[in-house]
Image (tube, rainbow, N blue to C red; front, side, top):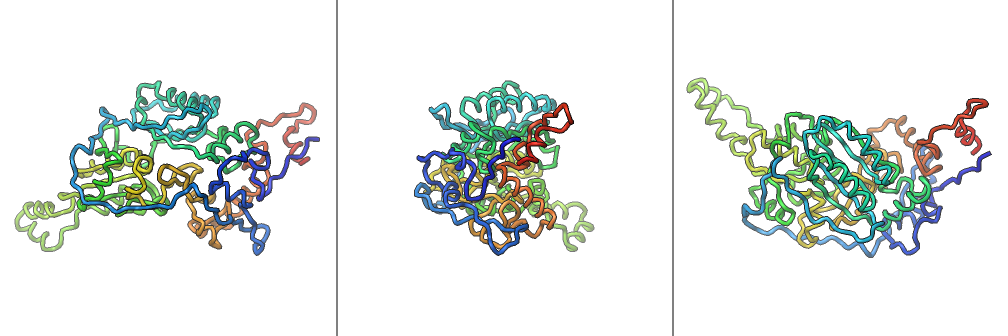
Length: 472
């Protein structure tokens, strides 16, 4: 009979149970939560629907308070901007070099390209990532590649080199982010021991790389919009403040509402979209010319098309504003700017490298950024200098939640938060609770044998895994 696997309880995080947390690791917000017994169970709830709450985050002396300074009045020299085109890519420079070969790096990258045979790259790329223990997510589509991966610098560079061995994907736009000491400890603890070692708090698990095939690398739902053909003008992070401080510039955040909720640039317009596909409809509604009133219709009938021409001359489309747009890493702005140009906008600018590059290069004392930037991995959010943010993730809806959100009666760890509670049925919540119980028991969703091929016994055709599971 197989020995029973240890049951991991809330108060002992998996990596701490296995002795994988270095004693010299600095106290950061995430580790502070675990060190303080991180999760507690509300005694007022029933066992089937108990709400798990996180204790308040301890303050870390390494996280300074934010300081902001308002914009200054400046002119806009043309040399600050560069016109983007497929034939003239603007590389993102300044990647930080790390001497330690075992240190981890996170690299987000993308490239729009004519890539009809993209499916052929999927399996070789996935195999290489697994071989090198590079984790993350990569999307392949007929219009190019988009991804974010984590691993040692040597491993990550090998993966990126393999991708760019296809000439169509050379010149990847890439943004590099540092990995915090706590995340690095979790990653190395996970990869050097058991899949139970880091559990859901491992931000970049080496055994979890996804390479997906999709129709678009960023979904706008408009195949006619092609950043390969034309995009707006790139603006360097150091010149961004000058552009958005001009009163004649309309600053548009092209991200979704759950991202803008935790941070955006001062004075930016929030389209309040729930998905990027909604952006074209918002633009059409916001900037379309008004319908002609009865007086103009009468003039049009009396004088032919001249009245219509005069009406159009006064319409918003004939005096389209200068637009400056931004997103997390720049990829959505490539499509959004291409779309605006196709609708007749003349001056369209976008932040090169996105918010991440701005937070990396612009000092906090000069910054016009307010709040934190949501990122699509288990760091959840980052601040200036790309330091770890203060938000956590609701595993029920994959949206950011603050400490205040986790005080709400609608918060239930692994199940729901104030932003998704009312949209979930009781059946969905029960499934989420069952999934959470699996993780609490085994440290991994689906149990300790997830991903393993059952070993069939020749005598009674019953798998060894089944017998081991029944004996635990």
